[in-house]
Length: 390
Image (cartoon, rainbow, N blue to C red; front, side, top):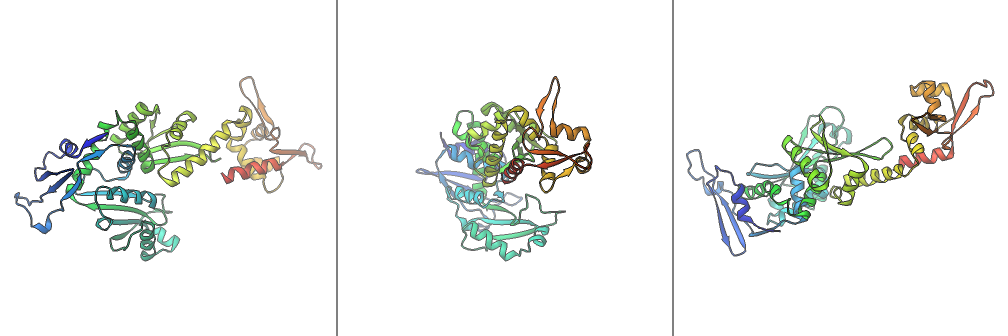
């Protein structure tokens, strides 16, 4: 889908912005903006933003959908004075720099801000120069003069948001370009209806920016969550349901979420998890474990997904133990231990125990014949090791 740049800007320009101008130069469009004082008088030339030149036609394809989805999730919106994108992944920051270059923005005109927790400084012993050097090399910058570092006071351990080397924000200060780019963001709902490639790329970008891949204790994929403002969550819930058949819910932490094998299969089939390297790896690993678990027989899966059963196997890994030790260390009743070990059968529920599955062996204590001693088998050790590796 090819769209006219000037039409997009005209549709979404602020009502109180008469001080900008659009001119045509063949296949190019120039946008200029005049800064004025409170009395409406133009400021000095050195206080005016640089005129920008853009292609007259913009192709709303899958790639552009990915870039706008990333910005929709991690960009600063509705501020035409600055285009700003933040993430802790150098791969995504590089992608955004390349995206800006497609519109004629040079890397030397960008400003980079690194946010870190002061606790990271204590934990890792990193200084400003080392952090600047890391980001300069990762982003292939010639100099670090445009890199500024901010140390934040955060309680406890450094959060996932403020990783070892911090979160990088890329900023481009230019009002004409900010007007254009925010018009692009605001135009997203208009063009997803008739453009399957664009909308697939868009949600792929959103998940890379604002998505979280949650896994269970055994490593299997549990939920996919997406954060955002109230209006963004409402739009994304509508978007996922209408175009991908994914019904999501809202939680109290200002996130939407969905799970279940059929829904995550759609994420996999449309490759919606592929942009962010860490999230891609986490999804692929958890998805593989989930499919492996679902391939088990119902009675086998029922006991191996049980957290108490996994804790018992983990406890038995080092040495045999008596039933009373299990009860004391697991914090469960004798009947519950017997149920996990030997299995459980009733009119409504049936599954094998760890002994029947060959994960645990049992012998009678010679000293006290009423007491059982439990040992993890080689099969059980292999299963535990496999879960740990995954």
